[in-house]
Image (cartoon, rainbow, N blue to C red; front, top):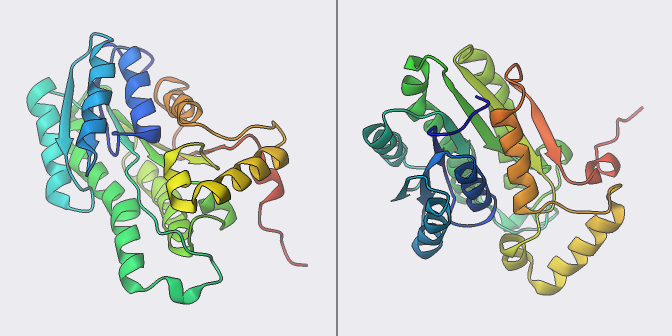
Amino acid sequence: MKDLADRVAIVTGSSSGVGAATARLLASEGCHVLINYNSNEEGANAVAGDCEAHGVETLVLRGNVAEDSDCITMATAAIDKWGRIDVLLNNAGTTKFVDHANLDGLDKDDFQHIYGVNVIGAYQMVRAVNGQMQDQEEGGVVVNVASIAAVTGFGSCVAYAASKGAMVTMTLSLARALAPKLRINAVCPGFIEGDWLKDGFGEERYQALLDFNRKNAPLGVTATAETVADAILYFISGPQVVTGETMIVDGGRHLSMAPLSRR
């Protein structure tokens, strides 16, 4: 869909960060947006105000994508208000900051919680919108926000990296299964500047990682919420023959991080 005017997008986890930046970008293109949050109602309402300044309509809904009923509620609300769903951005995510060598730092509940949001939640959202998208003449587009952790095995913890790897694999499976009406792709951001990693790592560790990633990225930059949103928009309104693909957004940092083959 080259033209997003009067189209409808559901953006999960859009009260801040990549979700918020993408909601604003879609609104600037004339797209109506359902803004989802789990705890940050104030942030979600602020994003809605920014979107409405572009002359589009918004819905703000609290919902936990790990709960299937919440996913269905979001899809139903969008259909009831606008009669269609054109775009789904699976951005809601969670993690726990634990050194990968600290095997005692994660337990079964941690894995289940992280997978429940990052993998099962994304699956449930696709399932919730699939019927409407299949019935529409032009179908719909899904973009999954994975992570460079899916490719390199690095990340905030082992469970997070594994969940994002699963999300990329799921992108391939669903892109094949739900075509031709749905196009499904994934973006894999690297280190993203902002409060999420700053709060998780702490100020000193965050700054050290920011400097290290910039120094070791061929382009000399790290990702921001806005640059990731640009990549997401590319999958939505760019080439309409692309599906089942992943795009790494990290200034080229992954070029020195990819796992090495053993000979």
